[in-house]
Structures are given as C-alpha cells and as structure tokens.
Length: 248
Image 1 (cartoon, one colour):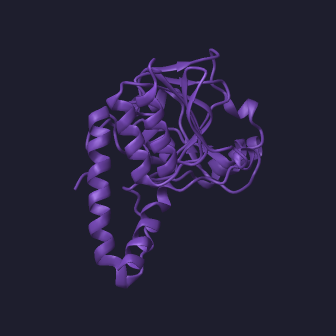
Image 2: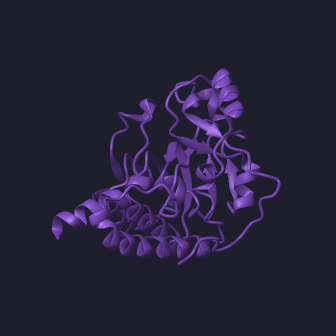
Image 3: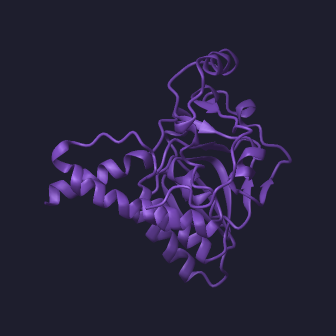
C-alpha cells in the first residue's frame, strides 16, 4: 500500500513538477528571511515551506513581501504555500523564475504581484490537465486522489477569483504549427517547457494588481537562454471568464 501511495503522489506531482530550465539549474535552495524580506529559492519542498513558515512566525517585524524564484514542485506544496500567502496577505515578487506550481498557486496568491523586467513565468498544467498516464491497476485509487486534489485546487482559485483555466489553457489550446514555426524563428527552437501569457491576458484570467518593478516586463529580451523554451499563447477573443470552470 505504501508503494502504491508513493506512485500516486509521483503521478499527481507530475503536472506540478519542476521545469527543465538550464539558466536556473543551479539556483540554490533557500527559504527564510534576508534583509527583512521573505525569500524562497529552489524547488518547492516540504522542508522549504516549513522553514519559511517558521522564519515568519519567529520574526518580530513581519515581512509583507515574498521574493521567490522557483522551478515548481508538487501540487500539494504549491497549494499549501499559496494558501499561506493569502492567509497572511503577503505580496509576491518574482525574482528570476516562477514556473509550474509556483506560477499556478504562488504568484496568483500575492495581494500585489511584482514582476521584474526579466521575471519568467511558465505554466504547463495543473490538477485539471487531461493527459494523465496511469497504470490500469492503480486507476481507481488514483482517481480518488485526483478528485481530492482537483477539489482543493478549485476552491483555491475560487477564493482568489481566478479562472482555473489559467494553468491549463496552453494545453487545451495548443499552439498551431504556424505559431510554433514563427516562435522558433523569432526566439530559437528547443524543448518547450510550457507557455506564458501577456499582461492583458493574465488580467482576463483574474490576475490583478500586477506591478512592474522596472516599468517593463519583457523577459525574452533579457533572458535569451530560455526564451525559445516558452511559447506565448494569446487568449482567444471568444474566451469568457468563468469562476469554478472545472470542479468536482
């Protein structure tokens, strides 16, 4: 039974796993307080979440902003961190990269969301993605676990008043061959890690209070090493904001 549970957790964390971004491969793991600010770098982990929460509780002067650079991690850990941010009404500032579970649950949780000119956001799926690969003998138990995770995610986005299509729009509206060709010619080819959206389209999904620290957000200009790995997906004119679009 223990082995089965480990397999299911591994599958469930697949859509929230870290992206393979070479420019950030050597990002050191740290969670705590530096210069009066909450700082979280590296993959999301149980140990890092705990260290961050404890550092905040022990601080006499409570920081109001979380500075983060993360390639992501398990869905459960992203939701845990996101809820904690909401509970403490913290702002979130993306240092270098916020991908996968970081983009899904941490960035949206910020009361005010700060982007630097070279902050990278990457979405590539969530609990509501459709392309699960599960062995037949674990399907029933997996479905039960997935229902729990999906229900939790739906409640999280509903509380934030964010359309939970945010994390899976790129999967359900895959870029056309022409768009990929144009993207590769403009930014370079390579394995695609996920998608990102324009500021205007993020707002359409319900991500408000985004502040540009440097007065601009054009990370592809400043990070040529990864610009080919992330496809910009324009949200269709037919899209309509829907709260609880996906729910159990």
